[in-house]
Length: 267
Length: 364
Image (tube, rainbow over all chains, first blue to last red; front, side):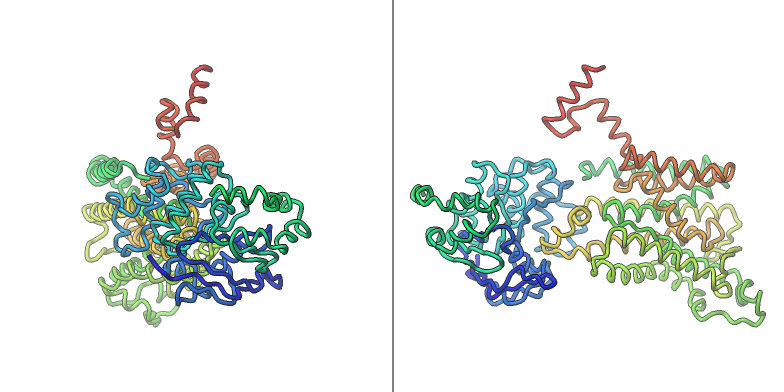
C-alpha cells in the first residue's frame, strides 16, 4: 500500500496555558502495531487529536513528505489518516452497509451522491469479511453490540482506504475473546498499513504491540519494545509512585515480571 | 431508511391524482383557492422537512426565503398591473415619486423567474456558507435564522414607499398575461402550485433514497464523525439548506397570485414558526409528514381560525404539545406505531422484544 511512515516530531499542544503535550516525538511504520500508552491525562488522546486536526498543535506530524498539522480535519482524512474514538461513534440510524457506504464515499465523484446505491462495493465486502460483520449488513448500527460497533468503525477506516489507522482504545469494554480477535485483526491490517493504538489495557498491549511509546504528563517517558519498556525503571517509578491509585492498580500487572515474560514466551 | 421506495413513489402518485384531478372536480372555487394556498405552505414545508428533519438544521426563518420568492413575484405582478405608470401606493405620498431602482428589472418575466430561483440560492448559499463553516448550529442557528425573518419583516414594514410596508402588495390583475379574475386562469394557477408541490416531493424522495440522503442523516446524527470520513459537513448541510430555501421561495412565489396579497405578516417570525409547526405535527423526517402537516395547519387556520379565531391558537398549541409529547416523530409515525402494537415481533428489533410482547398478551 504505502511505505510512507508517520513521523511526529516535537509535538506540543496547549490548552489556554496548560501544556497537555509538551514536545512529544514518535514514529510509526507500516508492518508494526504501534502502541501509545500512559496513565490518565498523559496526553495520548490529545496526541491523536492534534495529528488528526481536531485540536491545534505545534511541531510537526508528517505522513511521508506531507505535513499534517495546520490542515482542516477532512483534508487530513483525505490524505489517508483515519481514526476511531474512545466511545464508538457510528451512525446509529443507518445500517452497517450505509455506514460503510458513506465511509467509502470520499473516493466517489460528487454527482454519484445524487443517485441511490446499487449493490455493494467490493471494498465494503472485503472490509466486512476482515471484521467479521458480513452477517450484519442490513442491521442498524445502533443495535450492534459494543464490540461490533468498534469493529464497524475499523471497517469504516478500511473502506475509506486509510493509510494510517489511529485507534483510541479499540478494545475498551470488549470481552477477552473479542480482544484476542481484535488484536489478531489489527496485526493482519498492520501488514499493509500504519496502525497506532492508544490503550489502557496492558495485557492487550503486551500481547499485540510491536513497539510502545509510554507517555507521562505530556512527555515521552520511554520508547521501545514491550520488554524494553517494561524493564525501564522510569516507567516502573511513574506507575508505582506519583500516579494516582487507579493507574497503579492498572499497571500492577506490568510490574509482575514473571507473568509478563510468561505471556511474551507464550507468543 | 426507505426500504421500499416504490411504496413512497406510488404514494406521491396517489397524492398527485388527488390534488390534480380529484380536488378540481370536487371542491368549490373558494376551497380550491384555499387548497392552493396550503400547497404553497406545503412546498415550503417539504423544504423544511429536508433541512430540519433530515439535516437537523432548525430553520426558523424560512419566511425570509418565502419572502424573496413572494416579493419577487408580487413586484412583477404589481408592475404588470400598473402598466407604464408607477404603482399606485408609491404615488400616494408623493405624486411625482419615481420607481425605485430595484423594481425596474422585475418588469421582465425572465428576470422575475430567475430571481425567484436564484435569489434564495444566493442568499441561503452565502448565509449557510458563513454559518456552517463557522460551525454555528443548534439553538444559535435557529435564533439567527429567526432573527433574520424578524429583521426582514421590519425592513419591509418600514419601507412603505418602496415595498408597500405593512399593507403589503396586492390587487394584482394579471399573472404573466393571464387575467387573474378568470376562474379558468385561477384553476391554472392552482394546478401550477399543486404540480410544483408534487415536483418538490419527488425531488425530496430522490434526495432521501440517494447517497446524499444517507450522508445528510449521518451529518445530522454525528457531524464530527462525518468530518473524520473525509467529508466537509458544512457542504452537506449547505446543499440541504439551499434546497430548502429554494423550495420556500417557490412556495412564496405561488402564494402571491393565489392569495392575491403579500404582507410582512406572512413572512415574519410568527409565520415562520407556523411553517415549522406544520412540519413538526406532520413528522419532520418523513416524506409526506411536512407537506400534510402544513396543509392541515393551513386548513385549521382558515376554517377554525375564521369561525373561532380566539380558540384556534389554543387548539394549535395544544395539538403541538400533545404531538411532541406522545408522537415525537409527528402524526405520520402513528400508523407504524399502531401496526407495531397490533402485530408485535417482526417490526420490533429482534430477541429482547419478544418478552414484552408476551407479557402484553398475558395481561390481556
